[in-house]
Image (cartoon, rainbow, N blue to C red; front, side):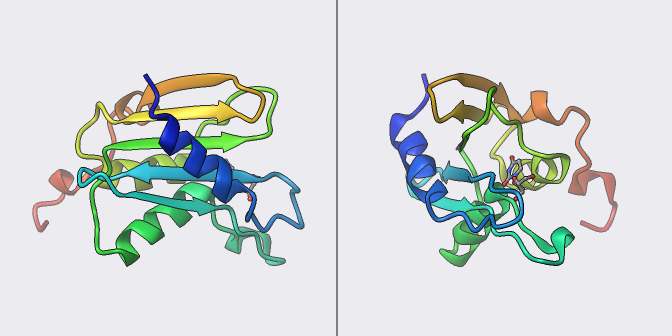
Length: 134
Ligand code: THU
């Protein structure tokens, strides 16, 4: 079952999204093995590719707090269907996920939910194991 606290954290931070270009607010929250929750929202920029996703913001908040492992993720947006993380964020989440079974709950503001693991979202992920210099 989805951690409702995690989803509520994602819902709350979504309010702070800076989205003058898309008007599409996204909130993300992640829980670390310590039990701490870190959250982030999307932050857009007039130079469009410079915008950052909510998931990336949550990961940055986690690192800023000195943590580098993800046990669970929740993402929420006002969308007709649960919004899956973009390709880049799938790679970012996989980097820190404790294993491939880490759950990502994708939710809509009107209550729909879809749960997938990071391994389902990004099968065959590129990892440090693919480099002999890690
Ligand atoms: N976005 C996220 O923040 N996370 C997602 O999972 C999907 C998309 C943002 C990026 C951009 O600010 C807006 O949604 C529209 O693409």
